[in-house]
Image (cartoon, rainbow, N blue to C red; front, side):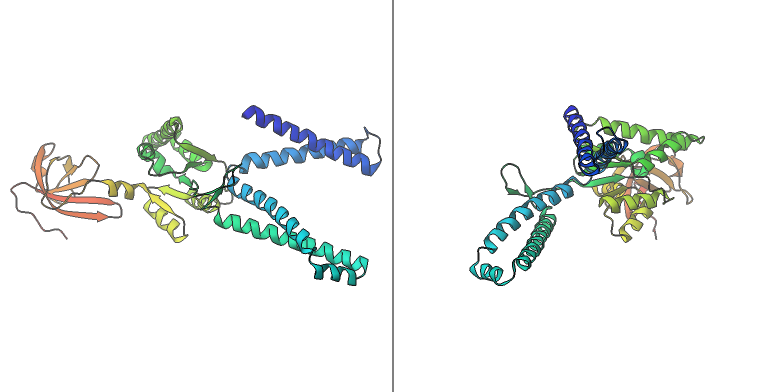
Length: 353
């Protein structure tokens, strides 16, 4: 496929350069190897290369819109031609053409042809553009079938570093094209090269996550090269990219999620997804918890469920680094996650605000 595309692009450059040369020879009457003719060849080749660069850079991003426009124009030209052929066969129109002088009749005919052609082209392109999310055209059999257009899922650094995206993408609950912005890659590289040990570890973990993501055969990844140099903040660049691609922001950043929602950008918060998929914990449930560390309040002990949920156990400081049976007394769901309050089995629970 790459070889075929290279051949087609090379042929396009040669034909375009040749066309400009032929036009220059025909219009300027200069000798075949005159400087102006050579410059016309260079100009034609440059324009062809520019078109190829635009095609490589933007075609994948706007392939549906491009096809819709081209196909709409084709149908519009054909429909307008057929309509005009029938229109000028109407007896009353033929009589009107005989009433006016020949020059006036030709001017009116040309104006009608241009106007009706543009009207049909506009109408067909608009109709196809407005219905492309529900229907698609299959060639060579022109059938109307329901279509699901893949979304651009734009990942920020928090999601990449988190690593859970590797597990989630295998479930196919996030269908779409995973989009990695270049400025996010630069951010991960800066973290990986940082002198701070924790930042360096986070950066390397994010780069490793992207490497694993690329290895998955069923995942479509798109690396966007737009840097938005006029925007300094990375979060603002993410929002600008989402608006440009009409994409979905995938993040763990709660504040970024709120800002995106204010700008009518669709957001998927992996923390919210993870919380929704966690098994329910209800007051009165018994469980085994290892007390890992002391809590903020006196005599509190802190443990964790397998999914990372924090469990605050009252009067458990004496059981530090021990596994004990606790009873759930209260569960609080916050925007940042879930907190479980518990007591050692057999103790009287304390009230929590």
